[in-house]
Amino acid sequence: MENKPIARTLRLLSQLMELHEVNPFKIKSIANAAFKVDKLPFPIAGKSIAELEKIDGIGKSLAAKIAELLETGSMAELQEMLEKTPEGVVEMMGIKGIGAKKVATIWHELGIENVGELYYACNENRLVEAKGFGLKTQDEIRRLIEFRMAGNGKFLYAQVEEEAKLLMDEIKSIFPEALKHFAGEFRRLNEVITELVIVIGSLNQHIAFNALANSQILCNVSLNGDHISGELKNGLLVDIICVDKSQYYKELFLNTGSDEHVEAVLALITEELEEPSSEEFIYKKAGLAWMQPELREGDTFIERAGNNTLPTLITYHDLKGTLHNHSNWSDGVNTIEEMVLYCRDELKLEYLGMCDHSKSAFYAKGLSIERVLQQHEEIDHLNKKFTDFHIFKGIESDILNDGSLDYPDEILQRFDFVVASVHSNLKMAEDKATARLIKAIENPYTTILGHPTGRLLLSRKGYDIDYKKVIDACAANKVIIEINANPVRLDLDWRWHQYALDKSVMLSINPDAHRNSGFLDMEYGVNVARKGGLTKEMCLNVLSLDEIKKVFEAKKPK
Image (cartoon, rainbow, N blue to C red; front, side):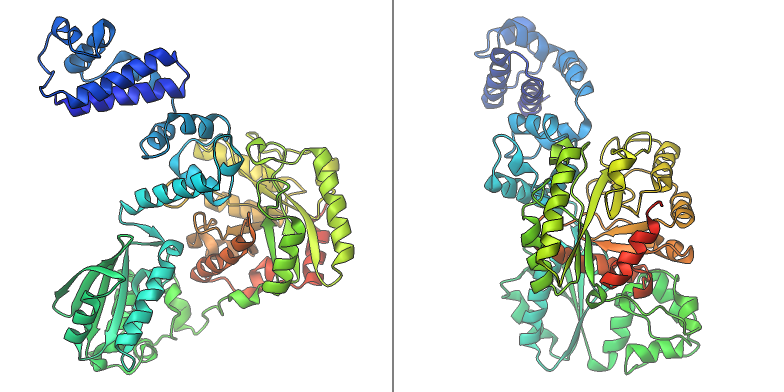
């Protein structure tokens, strides 16, 4: 064994000891030994305990540990520490720049147990509340995690959107007369992007290559046939396909849909596709209505395209209000009044649903019963002040382990609506997790089921549930399901939207905003809602103020 792995193991042991608040002198001794071992000019593998003891900075106790490591490949003390530390917490310590003390605070004070939860907490502005953290530290941790996430070659749509559009602007400046469009995952509005594909209809391929090779946006540019390859500065792979204008629409079609979708459409075309004049022409040849790019996943909507019964997809401008939002009463940044002014004046909405965290969410300053009543007084005052806008009294009530909500009925009945969400104990078996959600859904005060699986894209898959049973329970109890629009969540997954809609379950595009800028995340919620085939008729927050008041009133137990 080389010295570096030994030093790494000793360093990990010292960090875990610091995490669990072991004797600080012992921690310092092991950390110092890790440094010394790493710098030794000779290998220590094969040396006896007596020889190890003589090495400066090691000593008798550490010599025995190193000998154990060299002999068995592990250390009993290290294994003991690892067994009482969640795997995700150990992973957090591997992020350069955080350190054991900060990880201890994140784990013990904020209840965060993995990198995905930490990233989400940064987006929720929760770290600034913890001792030893500030806005600068929080932003740096977010940046480090994003860099780490990029290492696997996958990116959230929201992470690449701005750079993708800058690249397209550059292409437009190079080829003002050419046909050009995004294709692939980005055009289909996928929640996770592995490659950015752009199709250009132009004969001047070498002009494109030379211009892009000197681009300030694209790196490592290379030419391969009619493909110009490169990557964005964040590491996302880029494939630019340059073809003759006569082949443009064919290439755009072939490179937009998923493989399964393209194969299903082509199977319906009996003659050769030569030089189609549009994508609509291709679908017409297949006997299909033109399909929006976001619906081109598999063959889900092929039959409906053949029957000319494709859904008229919801748009961002259809939204009349925003539900499930957090103010500075819990872990949000802005006051309720600041949020009202932003929603009314900037977004031109009619209503705002306040859903601060409930009392079980101590890590997020969840509202005690007394504070619920105080907040309701403030909302009453603001509703009198803003007669052209309405604030609904909502709460994000934690679903406890047994499926109950964390307020008594006499408090739950005071809310206009209740979003019921799971935030703790995410490792239940599927049957128990499903039963837990169904019990919460059956609670007569539950209006909306919040982020149903608790997933965090690229970092936490969420808990396993029987989707059909959960959606069926929502149908039976007239509970709306949230599409959490935070780009890290986008939960309910769009792949289950059609099942919900077929069961007549309404969906609600909720930003889960923790600051005013978070309201803009509704755009990402609309993206995945469109992928799932959502129409405005089946979206809760498309309703006008008067309409949604009636829905909330009808749902409340009499």
